[in-house]
Length: 223
Length: 223
Image 1 (cartoon, rainbow over the protein chains, first blue to last red):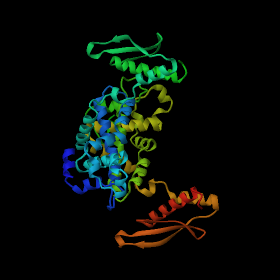
Image 2: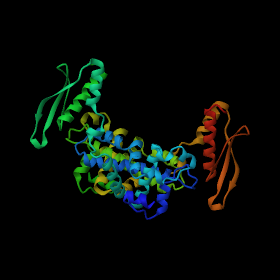
Image 3: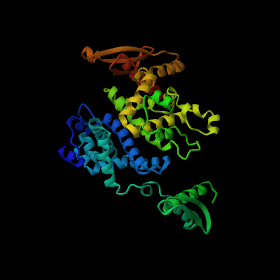
Image 4: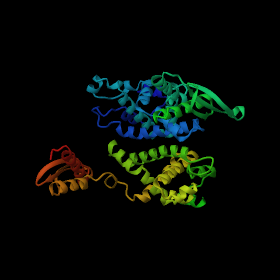
């Protein structure tokens, strides 16, 4: 367990809390990590919400929610769990062990949440924030809207190629504001006809938004 | 706004954060409370999770989740919002105002979450915990599993009366353990035939669990 603590950069004062966090319900122990997982789930929701709130100050609520959904899910937590080799430290039944239990996303993700719940109980939100955000940032080298949120440009191109055998083109329509705070209005065109335009804080953002508009028009049968 | 602060028992250091929390998106202001609501939603999830985790130490995760669902929802937050007359302080459009906006559950609940998000930003989790739990406890005089979780005994009786014109009977099957830590095995009977039995830390809990088993049997067509 010291190895795990080293990986985490956190030393438990009460080792029994750590033990509980590592105990899957299949284990024969008299306790398991389900209650801690319940707590840790809410802890991680808040840690990630606060992180995104602070990092993306200009982002509307809808985008923050999408970003959070991309970070807070079983697959993502299982990835963080693997970074600290959490599977090696779990108490699980022999049957579950033989069933590849130490490598299952669901078991790893639950144990990761339980572990964060345990640290929260002992040391509070700030400590969980420090540890989990550092793991996130190691995994997602550059947490950004572009990387995490659904890529509308790619989606649009897939649709237009399949439907019309056309590749969308993007053009700058106008730009406004001083250099440090410029806005770009981008348009998306099919065969020279504009099907959406939108303003972004970067050309790429404008293009993504314009692509989103075009996708919606296609879905409504307007293209 | 001082009135609201008095009701809350909290004084904002930065009044602009409070103003933002009170601003519905229909308002003509350049900002609104949606981002704070995103944050506050996660804050309240954790506050309630931690409260239940501490209060119901013997409760399995499934029951904690049910309890939380009963406390963390639009209707419940709207009720807390009304306790502090939050509707009176909102910035909303004239149209929304005429449309009864200050009394809508959705608008009140969102503003309540935003308000808790704002307090969290300024003063951290402990302060939100103090304020919101005090509001909860005033509203739900006795937060308990019995009061909040779906009442299986009532449900079962409704079903058996409609289906068989029978009222379920409950009997003590056995009890075990020392007085301070007794378990009760309760059975549920229809026309003298047992349809479910379960162990609880109280007779009532045993009965509820037995009723739940009987409901499941009926649903599966086994009764």
